[in-house]
Image (cartoon, rainbow, N blue to C red; front, top):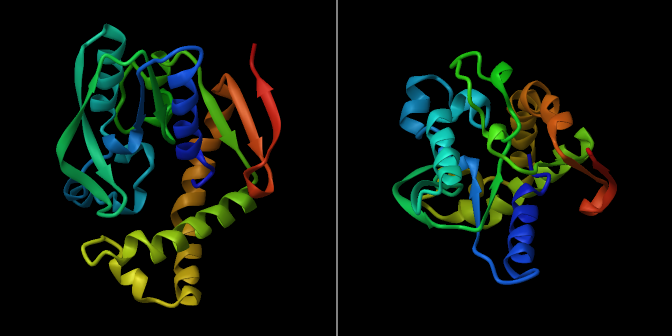
Length: 219
């Protein structure tokens, strides 16, 4: 949702890796556990990428379960925002001291997976959770700003999934981005993401320029 999850995750990784002493801190995004586009197309879910039903939740649960069980080497799928798909190889995580899991669905529970009922959730394995919050208007602005940045950088790769968007004028592209926000992102926000906010241990509320204006800690 462009609220700064990835940036916050990377910053925490750097801080925790060096304080109070050197530690192996892994960072994993739940995007790595999205179903491949081929399967999403078969399920007619390409327009719901990022919604609970677009994730291989069983593979994600096995990953966090293996972490908690102390498995020394864990294979993790790799997702590319350039190619907008899961890549045909894995990366390996080896005996981390701390793992940061970044994504939209970390705090979701059974009510979010009625399409695929199960009894174990990512939140069952998480020791401390952070929800980064902002007003809907700011989220929309940051989302469009981020897409414009991708348009001028990542999307210019002829092999990129959204390469054709890089050929459009900014004005035409902003119209399309607004439609994406209206028809996909804000629906996911209201239905699947906002309801999980109160489950977090820490809520960081941002204002303009990503400045944190409010910190709420659940004791």
